Length: 144
Image (cartoon, rainbow, N blue to C red; front, side, top):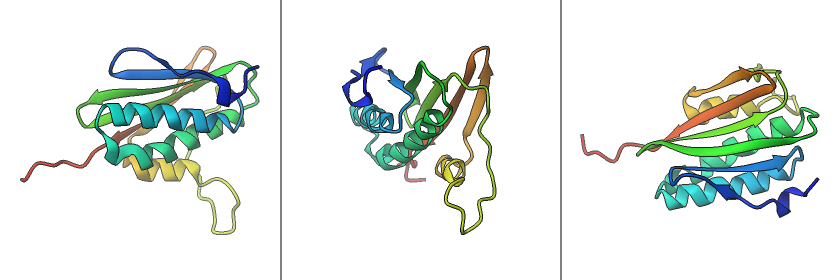
């Protein structure tokens, strides 16, 4: 299988970009570059940091599933101020929020995603796996 750093980014429509990545922790770096490039192109720079954390968590979770083919990472512009980051993998095990105690070494990732998205995330079971998505919104620049 091709190493994550060597996988080319494939872009689709102007409001959507995606890439297929191997189930490896280092695939998160390629996913972050995809999201970063898309957000800059859509002039949504204020979402870059949060999006990097979200996509890293979703890709990291997929990398731990033990699947052998490829995961699909997509970033799509939903509205002028909202993007959806999605990761489709071959595992049917759905993510959940857990109460990781202060001494826990793992288990806080989806809580971080929940916080960064204001609870706007979810998972959809599919015949051969699932898609986990997280929506990020810019702050309104309207002078109310």
